[in-house]
Length: 225
Image (tube, rainbow, N blue to C red; front, side, top):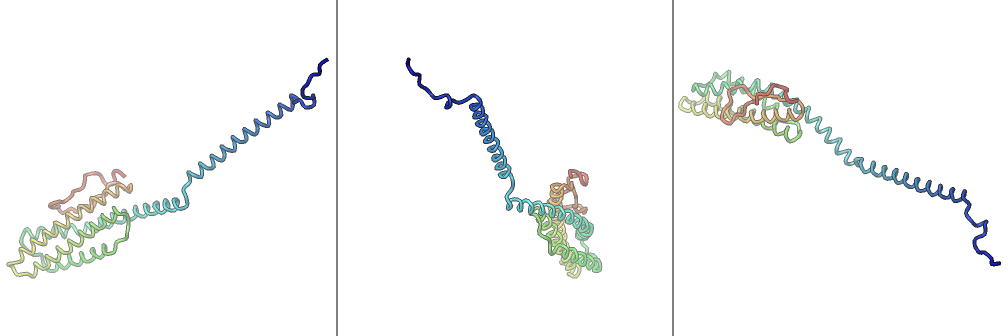
């Protein structure tokens, strides 16, 4: 009788052993999948987080934005106070020039004192965002031009009658330029108030305007905020 060849029975895989082997393989594969997912999630989370430098820059920009809003509010309040003092002076200069007469010396001295105070208020402005600096610079230039107009009126008051009219005409032109410059700055201030969430804020002078004068847009105060 021929002899059959093959593995001895003790070397053959038993069904229970094969099943345990398959289970270990499945557990190993599942563990690998879970670990790869966890690692991938950690990498993705880390990649989505700002670096210390980026976080510092973001904090700095947020701080600057808050400071700029406060500066805009303060500048708007200052512009309203300035406008209340400035508009009557510029209007009077125009009216006196049109009438061809110089104001009384005491009145001119009062104007000069007021303009000196206003000029001082805008002499050392704080540094802010570019748009805010532009508005502030425009208001300051308007105040300085108005101060020159007042000085021209003072010069006209002591000038001979033959040249007084010319000095008054020059003062009126300077007053008109101050009004126009203020209106441009006021329009810029209105816009940055809207951008800062404060809505429309109109600080234009109520003195009739002049060539190149920019008028308020007619929107209600605070609208668009």
